[in-house]
Length: 107
Image (cartoon, rainbow, N blue to C red):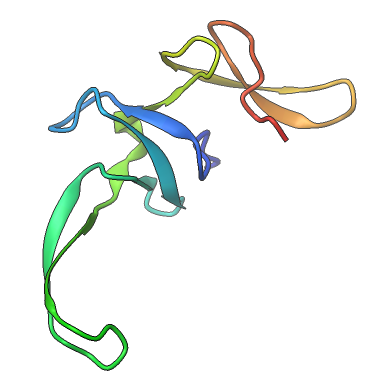
């Protein structure tokens, strides 16, 4: 199953304890259908000191969140929107905003 969310997209959380918060996608986990969003769904993990990481202690990091709980933010609309796919005249496949028809993939 292909995902409509990519790395560096701006997303808004629409369900759960973080509802309404906006962040940038750091990593996409397609097999699990989850993403990691910057400063969203923070958890604390206890780490032992090791030669590679140096000191131990309590580390705060982002936990994965299911893709059904987020929506992509459109740069033009400035709101969470549904994503469509279309092929341009030059043959490129792009994602677009279903509200304003603006192309989301800038490259």
